[in-house]
Every structure is written in structure tokens, then in C-alpha cells.
Length: 296
Length: 292
Image 1 (cartoon, each protein chain N blue to C red):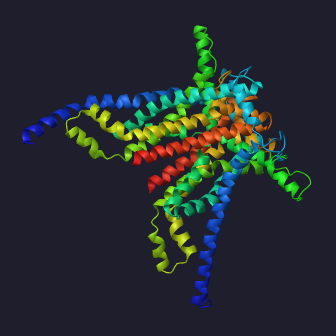
Image 2: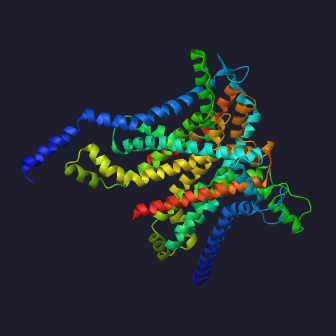
Image 3: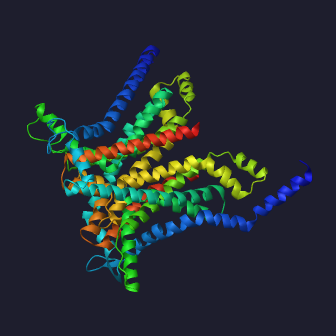
């Protein structure tokens, strides 16, 4: 290839990479999805924000009078109880998932390759199966005529069926069950990248396994811990299906409150306020997370 | 020194064997915890007893009732469930196609171009994934009722919630998931291949059509599969955007669970479980093929 040919090719290339052409390409790729998300995601969220400052209409809906009343209602301690319960249950779920998920992810990574794939597949399957079906399975187990009570009674441990369903125990179990795979997957991918020769190095230098774990393995895999915890905590705080199906009146979470404002009480403005609070609670840890990881 | 080196060694060995045992024990407990409910659900879909968990013998009645519903026989619930499944498939199919096209395009754009406002767009794509489902659900409910009210006031036309509103909701949350999966595939693409194509005289469009698209096709496919599964699974957003006659399978099952616990739900759940396990395995098989 001689010099002039090369020059010509460069000219052609530069023609196709002119600024307008690039802008046109950019537009074609980015515009459709952006437009969709603005129309059917951002705009709806903005309406929620507007509705939160409006007065409640007579038959559901709103009347267009500005008010701060909906936000003032938040001062009622009844709602604080529900907020704290949601946070408490979400923290509990996150902690329990971490406690079970971390050793499990570590276990899977340290198996021989052919086992690793099978075990990983086994953790992914529940992640892909219907959430509702998985929660329903716990009703089959926990209800008073359910499997666990039948076993307990036939073993003679108790004559009366135990109250296992429609309480915070059932909700916690359901949440942990629902979100455990979300914890395992990021932990697995972090631990998989961990350099295991560091363990040998630490042992050669005389550290025992506990010390090696707390000083080497744990600090080097904390990214997976943070990612997994966020993936569990965020959806758990906003849950409404699990407490709705497995819980009772004393286990209401924020999501249930929002749902009842929209469907039962038909107070859309106050429901909007509640969902804005929920969104803030979810976004806060994420913003903190990104700030911290940017600094590093 | 109060502890001799040999005693230290003993403690270390104790920690090691204890740790190993705990690791095994935890994994066994975790897998039992993950699978026992699912297995019991499947087993009890074959139980004759209608109301309790006492085993009264094997039966296929609950499945036969379900399939009788397909022929239009049996209880109304058993026929309604098939139309709910139909709705789920329509919603899943259409929303997957739309979300895959939009998500792939924006994924390519985000990976390939540097431009002003990229961070904002990054946030816009990220938000539907992290926002609580119920917030998205109620915001769409408010949005549609607002728009429908507006339309009625202007044109006198009365629109109601139905399949189109459900589909719009599903596309909105699926665009981001498709974009994430497609972008991961683009990131692992060797840029030399595209450079080679343009060196050999292919223009941008030809390079895209002949090189980029076939190479990221497996990513697009697994993005579409994820979108389809998420759409079939979605309960919360559908719950707030569906209307009369546009009930999907999860919404229908939710209604059944709220009403009473019957072996029929076990049978439906078992079928849904097997379907999703089938999807996982086929998607993994697809990935294996594309890796070869």
C-alpha cells in the first residue's frame, strides 16, 4: 500500500466522521430511549411530586389547590412506626442475607470448576423464578394447616397449631428468602476475582485462618459486600408484596401504606408524599455509596 | 509467653477445621432453605387434600382441572387463568421487542460516544432499576389518569387502563435492564475488529451491520430474555397499570392467593416454576453456544 492510497483512505474516513454525521448518529442511538424514559418515567414521577402539594379530590384524584397539609401529616407517629419498621426489616434482611450469603459465595468459589457452575446455577434459578410464587410457597409451609404445623403436631411437640403466618417472623423469612440470591451473585463475582495466593502469603507470614479472613479476605472483598447489601436493602425497603401476603396488620411496611392510600383510602396526594419519602430513603444510601467510591 | 507455639498451632487447626465445617454446614442449610419451599410446593400440587397439608394421596386432578379450563370447561377461574396467561405473553412479547430495540440503541450510544450530558443520561438509565417498584407503579397510575382526564376534557374521548398501559410500564423498566446487559457485551468487544473493517474500506453503517451487530447479538439476545422474564414476573407495576380484562398471570395468581389457598394455585405455581427454570437453562445453553 503506497502513501497516496493511505492518504485517500484517511480522507474518506474523515468525511464519514464529520461532526454533523457524528451528531446525527448520536441522536439516532440515544434519542428514542431517552424520549421514552422522559415521557413514561420522568414525567410520571414529576406528576407525583406535583400531586404531593395538591389537595385531595372528592372521588379520588386531586383538586388543584396548593397545600402543605400532606407533608404535615407525616408528623403523625403512626407513620413513623411504619417507616422504622420498614427500615428495621430491611436492615435485618440485609444482615441475614450477608451472614448466609458471604460464606455461601465463598464456598462456591472454592469448589472445583465443574461443581462451581452447578452450584452457581442453583443459586440463580430462584432468582429467575416468580417472586409471587416463591412467597406463596411460604404460605404452604407456615399456615396453621401448613406443612410445618402438621409436622410439629404429628411429632407431638405441640397440640395447637403455632401462629407462624401473618406476623413479622413470616415477613422476615419471606424477605430473606426473596432477596438472598441478590446478595450471593455480587459477592460471588467479587470473591471470584480475589487473588487466593494472598491467603497463602498471609499464612506463610504466620497468620491463622481467622486473622487472614478478617485482615485480608474481608477488606479485599468489601465491594461485593456493599453491592450485595444495596441490592438487598433497596428493594426490601420498598417492598409491599411480601408483607401484604405473609404479614398482618402489625407488619405493615411503607409500600403497604402507599398502596392503601392509592387503592383503599383513595388519598392520592398523601400517597404521593409517602412514595416520595420512600424514594428518598432508597436514593440516600446510593448517593452516599457513589460519593465514597468516587473519592477512592 | 503463656501460650506455647504448639498450643497456638492447635488453636489454629481448630479454627481451620471449625471454619471448614461451618462453611459446609452453612451451604447445606442455605440450599435447603432455597429449595425446600419450592420442592414442597411442587409435591403438594399432587396432593388430593383440598384444604390441609395432610397427605391424602397422589392426584393429577388439579392439573387436569387447569387444562379443562383451556377447553373452556370447569370453573370460571380455570378459564380466566388462560386468558391471564395470554395477556402475560402479549405484554411480555411486545414490551420485550420495544425495550430491546430502545435499550440496545441507547446502550450502543452510551458505550460508543463521548458527549455532554452523558452523566445525566447515565442517571436516567440507572433510576428505573433502583426506584422502588411501587413508586414506579403509582407514578404510572397517576400519569395515565392525568393524561386520560386531559384527553377527555379536550376531545371527549374516554380511555381506560388496559394492555397498552401495562406494556408502556414494562418497556419503561426494561429499557435499563437491556441496556445494562448489552453494554456489558459491547465493553468486552475487541475494538480492533471494527478498526479492521473500516481499514478494509467498510463505512460506518456497513461496519455496524456486518461486524458490531453480529458480535453483540448474544448480548442483545440475553438482554431480551432478561426483559421477557422480568415482564412475565412483574406483579407490582402491572397491578397499578392494568384494567378490566388486562389481568396478567401474576396479578391473577395474587388475587387467588388473597382469596384462599388451594391446590390449584400449587399446580399453577409449579407450571410457572418449570417455565422459568426452562428459560434459565435455555439462556445458559445459548450463552455456552455463543462462547464456542
